Length: 101
Image 1 (cartoon, rainbow, N blue to C red):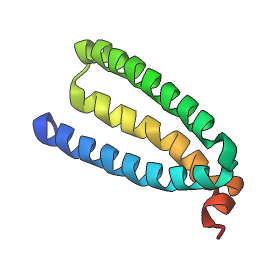
Image 2: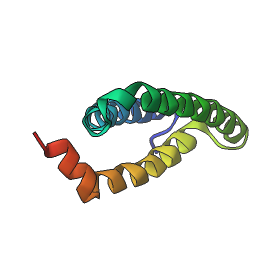
Image 3: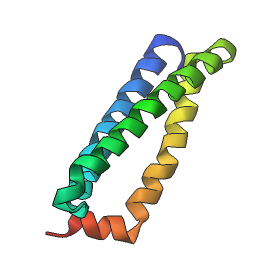
């Protein structure tokens, strides 16, 4: 069974890589979709929401880390992260926005 430090390291690398790829594509698409005069406001709100969500995530990881092993938590959270990523990638409006010149 793939456990311990190696499992956590591999899962963490995979999640960071997927996060980087998704953010690059979605941020570029979002910049095209937001009117130029409102970009600062909207991106500020998105940034604030992301920062708040990180704090909640750290808190939840801490509580779950007391009950489960880290490799199980990383595996479950990576699988959960695939759900919104899949929905976003299959959404025709987002696909059109990203592939449009």
